[in-house]
Amino acid sequence: MAKERRPPTLTVQLPGGQSRIREAILYVAEKGTGMRFFGAIKLNKIIWRADFNSFVGRGVPLTGREYRRRYFGPALLEMLPVHREMEREGLIRVDHRDFGDGIIEKRTVPLVKPNPTFLHQDDLAFLDEAAEYYRHMTGDDSSDDSHGAAWRTRKDGDPMPYDLAYLSDKPLTLPQRMHIKQLIYEKGWVSE
Image (cartoon, rainbow, N blue to C red; front, side, top):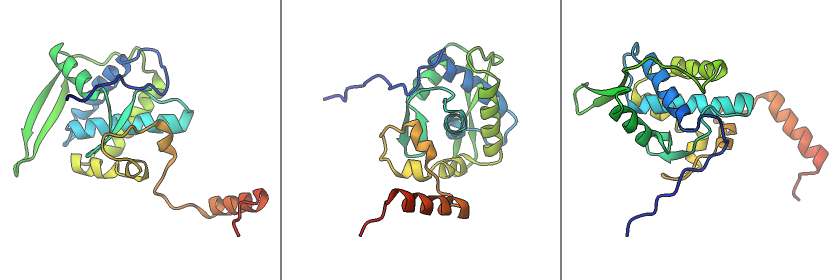
């Protein structure tokens, strides 16, 4: 029996819908032309980081689309179908680069200039930051980097809601620990 496919769940309804993914792919792919390593995994991680950092930074994600936990890290549920559609429409092509030892990079190359209609300057700034963050990483490095606390709370195929962006592997700072202790004291959150 075939598994029933359900439509993606939108966390936030944003103007442009799926077009926001398309614009992000074109924008990031153009940034990727200058990167030594820029395969499908890195494309996914750049958009994921920008989307989740946008949610934390301003309360609104970049795409508003559903993410799932995948083996190589969080990925947009619609990424593969949208990417394939863009390839069929002649907006992008995928070049295969052989790095040896069975490592084949699937590099997305934009065939048209990005024209962000639905992505605004703030959105592009989050994409720029994410692209710069991953610039010198390989696909494996960027995948490993995305396997943080949020990813570890899920199993492969599980949804990854934007609220997971608040989870962090970074240790709490002294002021944060002091604030928590104060809250525990004030609210009586102590078990006997």
